[in-house]
Amino acid sequence: IILKDALWRTVGKGKRIFTGHANGKITINIREADDDVREQLRVDLNEAQRTLVGHFHHEIGHYYWQLLVKGVWLKHFTSVFGDHENPSYADALEQYYASGPLKHWQQHYVSAYATMHPWEDFAETFATYLDMVSVLHTAMYQQGNQATLYIRTAEFDDMITAYKRLGILLNEMNRTLGLMDFLPEIFNPTVINKARFIHKLVRSAQNGNPSN
Image 1: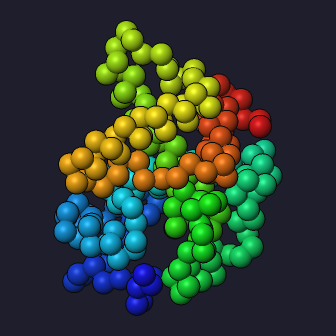
Image 2: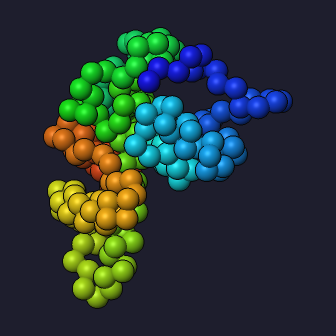
């Protein structure tokens, strides 16, 4: 669905507030805390999920691109996500809202919005990676002494396998109650490769080694 005047949606009287980031300062439009408003936006934008936590995860991804990708990781980033300078972000944004996401985007992207520009692809994939880590971390503590996957040291492939298995279970639980899928993303080979890049990036920073 292509929204009319989608770039500048009216958010009520007074100053317009947009969700975004500026050098690590994340701003969230407080109206998104209203379930009715947030759900209407989710439907209008044809999104599988829309949450305040999801917004934070996405915007944090943009910030960590600035912190970690610039420099030695930039060439590797371009090889995985594409050239962030061509087209420009402004041109890509306008094109996205004029024409919508790329056809068959599920084969190569984690979300429709990720098709807009490499920066958004990175942020959407980063947010999905944070979701995975958070869910697996919670599941690990719920298992207690029986836990076999420790997030700080786990191999990426083991994390993906565990997340897929857990996602299928939770999706079926939600469907049993008539709820939306807990894990709507499709982890195709391209998305897994992008998430693997982010895993390496995060682990490298965690270990104090900026090289790729």
